Image 1 (tube, rainbow, N blue to C red):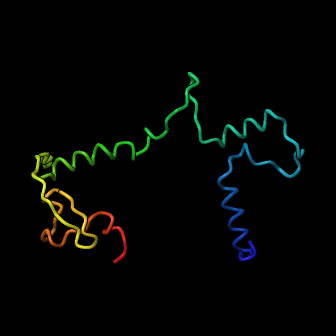
Image 2: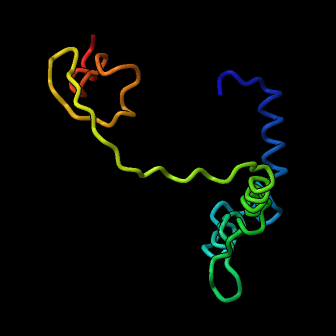
Image 3: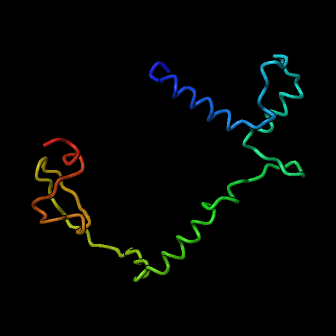
Amino acid sequence: MDNLSPDQIKQMISMLQAMLTKDTISEPNDEPAQSTQQQTNIIKTVSPRQVNKTGNLVNRFDEMMESKLHQEDRAIDQALSVHSPTPRNRRSFDPINVVCRVCGRKDSVNPSMLSDSPSRYKCNSCARSPG
């Protein structure tokens, strides 16, 4: 607060006063202690929760624009999709016997796991270590 000039403080006070409702503003001449009923009324007016007539909480998200965005996204995705989703490839494979080029461990692995050639294979233990 030390960085604010007096003009900025006055501007903040006026902004805060504009946000308060007439019920929550207390005049300086009023008695300083408010009754518990008045304090409850102030809390109810400031509280972001709303309760309907049946006593249930109101979901205010349903009233917001964001509640329907996922429906628009789904429609856009369907309109823009050129290809259907690729089916999973669950074919069995014939494992290849390879030797780790670092430690010499022998493994049998899926051929798709080998990027270049079987002579460039590194086992999991050696691949995690530096170097």
